Figure (cartoon, rainbow, N blue to C red):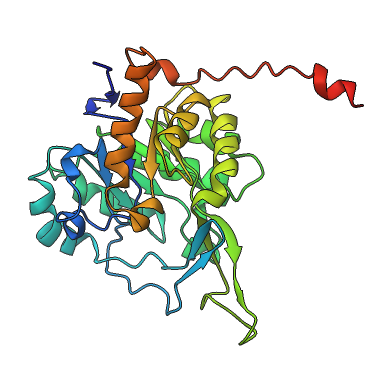
Length: 314
């Protein structure tokens, strides 16, 4: 039987497929549609210190090969989560990663410190694509120094796995990956959504109330693969690949370019059981090809491309 598990710090994931934050609620919403215990891990919807209403509608727009969202980090707040959502998560036989979003470094620290006391929370993913209210709304994730400072501050507060979720909306994502690795991150997850917009030609208005939003889905997979590959050339810590994964083959592509695991996001809206099917499909592909451990795929891309045919046309 093919080995599918991997470890981050002292936490073992039964397989290399997790569900992305914001696409699977807090776990209990989909319990009648999918066996969550088949997942390697579940990443919660983002949590802030106080509840957030998020942006006004419209907040979602379908696009060719994907979707735009401008939810605005709407969430129930960390206290409500601990009281009303964590009891269900405690019953699961899968890793639970809490995603944290905040408007200041102190808020990140406060939320993590509260959750770190909860045994059912196995680790943290930090969403740095949040507006820094002290710096005029500039996203933390586009400021390398701020991202490193968040990582360093949070590292001192927990012994649990610390994953930093990076934005693709920067010039060199590898610089951010190196910065958080030096600051103590156990892993990075990438990519977060790509900035995009959609327009209604009948009304001559944008389809999102915020005009622009985050593009996800199959349309961004080539971008995500390139960003994961770039980061993998720069850091030794594990990378969790995200972006347009819709099949086991898609997931294996991310492993080949350097990801140790993947997250499934938009496909959860198409088929809530997609993540479990992808995890099973990866194991079956490996078994058919007599691969004993999915770790053999990680970083195994043969990038020595033969250019002789191309050159003959030049």
